[in-house]
Image 1 (cartoon, helix red, strand yellow):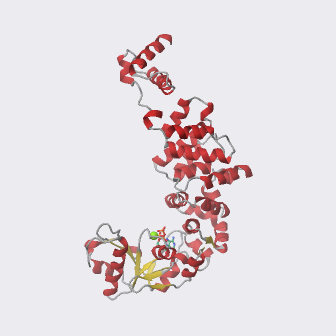
Image 2 (tube, rainbow, N blue to C red):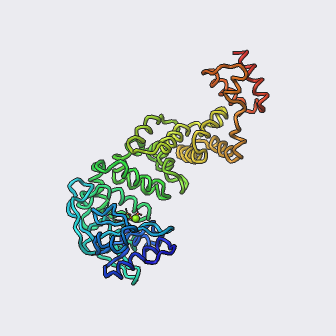
Image 3 (cartoon, helix red, strand yellow):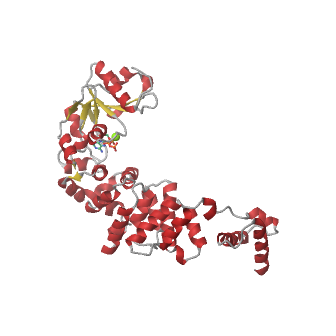
Length: 419
Ligand code: ATP
Ligand code: MG
């Protein structure tokens, strides 16, 4: 096989060519075929073939293949950079799913039957990049053209086999702007309470993908309609709140900027109004969803600081300034802005903070004038008093009352005397 630097797409063609030249059937499969028909650049390419995993390893060589998924018929074929590795899956049928998560056994078969085990018609297509032929055994092309997410076969059976498919259905519908076929939606609603058999990590990955996408409002709407939100995020006022609270959250989620982060979206889903006490709620959610520490901190930072930003002009600047330095200030302002708007609150506090953080950082967050060591040089022994003095000095600095290190020393000495 040619080993010069190629793109992932070129490499995916080469893999099919190599398998075909060795006398096997090989197609691109699943998500990459769908993405190409929709007109999106595939995130990755998967290949399906009638070669067995052992044959795939022999054809590409053991050095260039990884057998990580061999037990369920998948061999990873490594390309040279920048081409991403490609998963080559032997056509398979999956028999039963007694636990609602994993197939019990794997048997190799042909493309037609392999299409049947896939989740949605839009994901069940094969494409031969050598002949430009589409192999559609399940009506996927038409559903892509019409923009419909439809289960392959009976949605109740397909969801019973693998409950994660409920979230995948919603993600595909929302991110592609497709309709979720009504039987499928109805079945998800009936089965929503069973989502908990899926691991927290997999639920979280789906939620991250839906909520960091520009179409997050559609995803949230479908999560509400399917009753999955009540199972996954019962802490949201969308689940327990009155109509006014629900309307506020929906309005905020719809107004977040397209590129908003997962943490911003979660903060908005938890806040119908500024000032809800959420520290414990966020902790509980972060533990359940196994969020990374950075995300946990960001969601907490945003939730705790929202009221301070909304009220910034009614309080002292150092209060808002500290809130803005504890988390990403631009993200915090975006979240505070949409929540204020959803509650018809005066935006002047948010506008004020926005103007401040657009200035060079050293203007609104200047380097502190003194530190603990410098205080000890002034004869103030280490202890809680040092922290208090430094915090008061910081306030004075942020308010413009003290501007140089020399002034700061004098200010401290006067403060110590008067205490
Ligand atoms: P994306 O990669 O954009 O999330 P995808 O459809 O490619 O979408 P993958 O998880 O990469 O999703 O899976 C590749 C293909 O494997 C899918 O297109 C589908 O045919 C099949 N597949 C994946 N997960 C499931 C599942 N839970 N049930 C049935 N088929 C699945
Ligand atoms: Mg994929």
